[in-house]
Structure formats: C-alpha cells, structure tokens
Image (cartoon, rainbow, N blue to C red; front, side):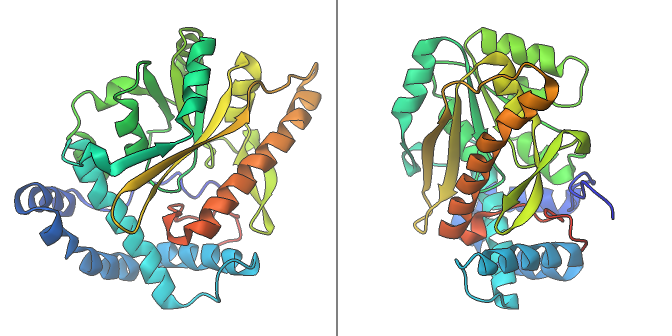
Length: 303
C-alpha cells in the first residue's frame, strides 16, 4: 500500500484557476459562486480518488454515529464545500473579504499566551479555512508564522497566493535544513507558530491514533515541537457558517507538554495529547461534516 498519498502534485491547472481568479475579481462573488456546481461536477468526474476519499470519510463519520448513511449526493456536497473554500480563498488573500465577517471566540487564550512571552503553537487541521485564521493573524500584535510543507504545491495555490503580497514571508517550509532552527528562534522571540497537524510528510514520525473509529497516522512532530520548547498549545479552527461568515474558535490543549527522559517515554507522554487533538477534530467533523478537506487516503485503507 502506498503511504502518504497526500504527497502528490496538487490537482488543477493554471488556465482554469487564472480564469476563476479573473472572474472572481472582476465580476464579483455572486456571479462567481454560480460556477461552483459546474466546477464540483467536473472535479468529481475527473478525479475518482477524490470521490472515493470523500466516500471513505463520510462512511467513517456515519459509523461514528454522527451522520446518516453516505450517498453520492453527499460526496458532491462535500466537494462543493471545498470549491466554496477555494473561492473564499481568492477573496481572503486579495483583501476583498469583509473583515467584519470573521468572528472569534476564545481570544483570551491567545492574550494569555502572548503575556507569557514564550511563543505559542497554534495547532489546526485541514478542516475549515486556514486563510481566515491567517487574515485574523495579520492584525495581531505578535508575528504569526505558519509551518507548511510546500514541495508539491500546484498552480492553483501559487496563483491564489500571489494575490497576497508578502504571503511567503511568514511561512516556514517544512523539510528544509533550516526549518527547525527558524521555528525554535521564532518561538524564543515570542512569535506564534501555526501548524496544521493532521498530515505528516515523514511516515517515521507518525503515531496511529483512533479517529472516527479507526486508527489513522497522526504526525507526532508538532507535539514533539511543543514538548521540546515548552510553548503552550492552542487548538484553533476557522469554520465557514451558513451565512458566509467565518467563526474562529480557540481551545487550550496544554500550557506545557510534559517531557520524557528517553525517546520512548517522551513519545508515550505525547499520546494523550494526540488523542485529545483527534477528539477535537472528530467534534469539528461531526458538527461540520463538509468542512473536512483531506481528500486522500487518510486512514491508509487503499483507494
């Protein structure tokens, strides 16, 4: 079985995304939103692995008792939610998304972390919108940087990200020789580091954690980072609401992750926090089933 199936060139092509961006910025949101269903149908027809990944996820959610039995119309609704996310991304990165349409709860946790001056790890997942969170972070009094694996970024992301001047200056690329040193220095300087902790680019650093009734490989790296630095960890999600606004919610995972004296014991101490992270993801998926944007073999069942 082939592992890490998300480590593939991003789907989509430069012509279609450039056309979408032009339409969005020149003809407005309402008109561009009409293109979501044609795009959804094309995407569902052209990429069978996406359909199957959605079906597998919805099946897991159903078995967990939080969703009715999957139907293909639900798969289309799931892909349609992703197309909405892409459209919103254009407006968020181009600065055309109304800031008053982004609301936050639990902001006091961020203020507490800021006062500690130890930096903070903002831990999220590929559920909802990272860009809405980034938009909020632009107005923060402390620098907000993002740890991301960028090796397989495709044309769609490149063109959309080009809408935001300086987008790359706040990204720390995973897999580079200087990544860890840069991250450690940033936390020492009291900066906030964002990590989407549900995907691993290194199989050797994943731990099987039960998620929606079956073990899935959850990366241990983000938790090792918190353990090493002693930085507080706050779980943050940014979920699109039915009225088109985004709700950012903050939840404390730990003020400090305990360290172990040996590698094996250090990993063992991480498991309860990784399980808590998985439960947090489950709650988000149960409350917002179509906000999950991991269209790959997440449980390594074979697609």
